Length: 367
Image (cartoon, rainbow, N blue to C red; front, side, top):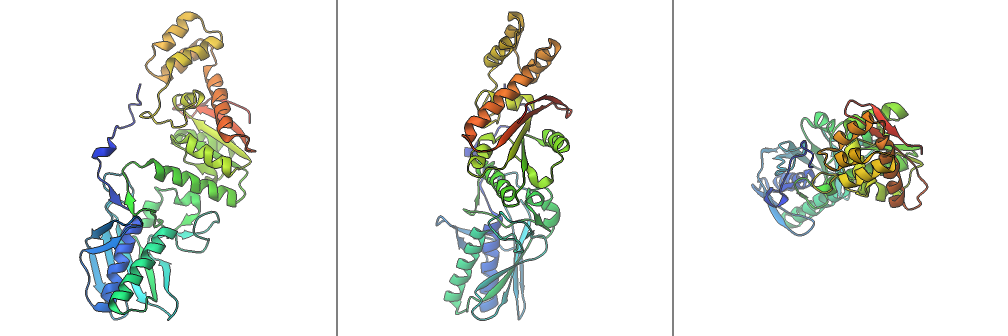
């Protein structure tokens, strides 16, 4: 049965949007052109990394003798992006001859404080691809209008500090605001790749900072319980969500000493049955298999039959708890076994917590 809390979306009917990096590039290009020529291009066109040309309307224009500023409203399409509707602002000023393009963080753009990210500590949280896109755009304008290409580009997102609290940035050691992101310039609605990339960056930070223990959780309730149990910092928390496989495969290549997997009974039943993507639209609880688990624990046939006909995993959990059948313990053990198979011998101690909707631990394996 599908999780009723998970909305269904048909990706083929959803409208794509633009990354903060694409918006920042367009704003910087328009500002630099105005700084040299005195005129703002509106709309301003940029070329994305895969060659597509797209245009952006300007929402803010300001030209002074020593700087130009442009703001562009980010349109994330139909993706539930916290930065949808945010203003991405680029201010361009002349810089020291021969310096090329330099970057600074303005209001609402974060600073990197920890190693392990694509940008070193002490730098504005403007990722490599957006930096390259901006450099290319500045070079194009310098060639077309006779500029030097030596500029300071300051990016800002008004209100970005508050928006950043809804992102992974605080856990990644990015303080003060948002990151300017994007590898293609395009936001694809409900993209799995963006979530998995964030998990990977969390692992990179954990490895770079020699964290001994990380926790991958399916949701907020399980995460809070696991963090309280193990007393780890926020930097040790990986927002695994449904992407157990994406987390485990990356940990296989970038191991940490210990991993706790924490989640609800239904999600971890899927992992116990071999699924690596736990989303209700991409994997389902196999109730026949759960009945076999129960039978393995000595459940009578009438209980097994009820399990086969069950509507939800939590219904099965409640039934088995009432019969003193530790099906949660077996699910946790099998989930750990499948996690270890995916890790393929990586030197990582793994334990599994199954947590109910009120935050209570109903099963726990050893590492």
